[in-house]
Image 1 (tube, one colour):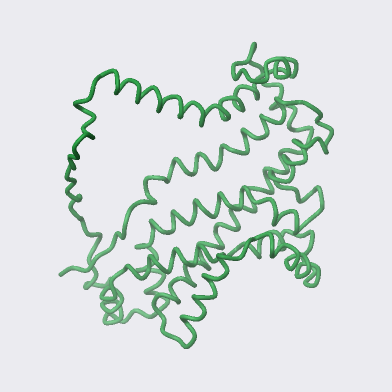
Image 2: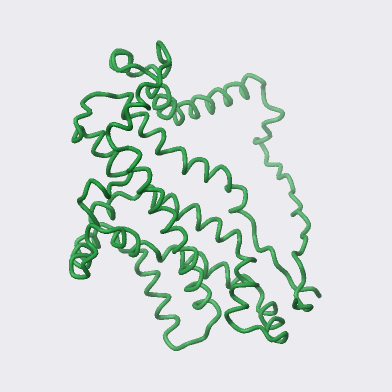
Amino acid sequence: MMTTLASQASTDAPVRHRVHLPGLNWENRSPWLRALLYIFLLVIAVIYIYPFLLQLGTAFKTSPDATSHAANPLPQSWVTGAFASLDGVGFAKWFENSAFLAVSVTAGRLLFDSMAGYALARIRFRGRKALFSGFIAVLAVPGVVLLIPKFLVFSQLGIYNTYQGMIIPLMTDATGVFIMKQFFEAIPDSIEEAARIDGAGLGRIYWSIILPMARPALLTLTILSFQGSWNDLSDILVAQNSPGLDTLTTGVGGLVTGQLGAGTQFPLKMAAGLIMTLPVAILFFTFQKHIVRTGEGAVKE
């Protein structure tokens, strides 16, 4: 093991100072004014959460109940028939395809985006700044502009209507490269210099030292990549037109628009949307506290 590298450094919590501004001391305000403020915030919160509550309640309704009381999130009687009916529309296959796509794309972005970000942040080579400027320029291009070129490329390469065409083009993105590059640049150069003194090569420095220190950035990239690929619709529509390759976005989209003969079966549609929402919500609430942390490594002075 390298003796010149320290373990994770502990940093003192930043000192927070309360700023007192004239006329903005809510603690000394009238209790009625504070109560009105809380009521206003509660109303705003209910407005934002109401669509989700409506989706949740409708998923457990019967079709007549959902039609007669469309705006009421509380079912007259709680039933789970809508969830059982999902098997008849191919929902399990959609979920399987979405899970395979999201996991593959997320793993690819973690690897390739971190490698590209590290190269742009640490390796000095001719054209490095121009290449990074190209990544930034890609961020300004609307995704819809690239749909037709993507279709043409898929057709020429023979990967249209294949899992390769759905996954490979999404395994790296400019946003992820930018996030990783900015994080790697914040890591002190002295850490890598100490590793080189101990005989570590470029590959080992990246994989064994720098990458573990980039855990906050990797968690952020994991959430963004999984959410983006899980909810992706336009790229999937361009890459395939086979029912066997439908994901949750294309499958549930066809279900909602009535293309699959679902009609006005609101509980069925809301049940599909609810299950589609859960994996991303669970992932975000599980790892949200990690994405705001800063670097975790340091050099012993």
